[in-house]
Length: 166
Image (tube, rainbow, N blue to C red):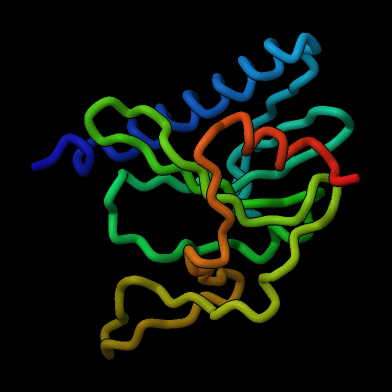
């Protein structure tokens, strides 16, 4: 059994901490040290972390995939659209080194609410009920990878998260 499968919760938390560490490091290197990191006690709107910089608050749902994974979409809670600058950050990592490689972003520009969930496909449960029916999950939408913007550097993602377009 693969360590990545057997200890997936550990790995997810590790990737989250690596991501937060990289964000904090960039705030440090920009000589402002203004980035604030918050963790929701309860995740009922799909938000894993909250980051604030330059008076821009980002409610972020984190997703991860190892390089070469076949995942072509992610499931997103529609309530994330009710949060200030809600967004999804999908991180691709190297399975052997856990290095963060690519970042996929689904959201609006800094300071704007999340849009694009309205017409997305309603997700279904992964397991069927006793009758073999996979019930719909009315508050969850499926977003295809093609709708995400790809960034190959954490610096580029940081700018997308916190620098408003002029």
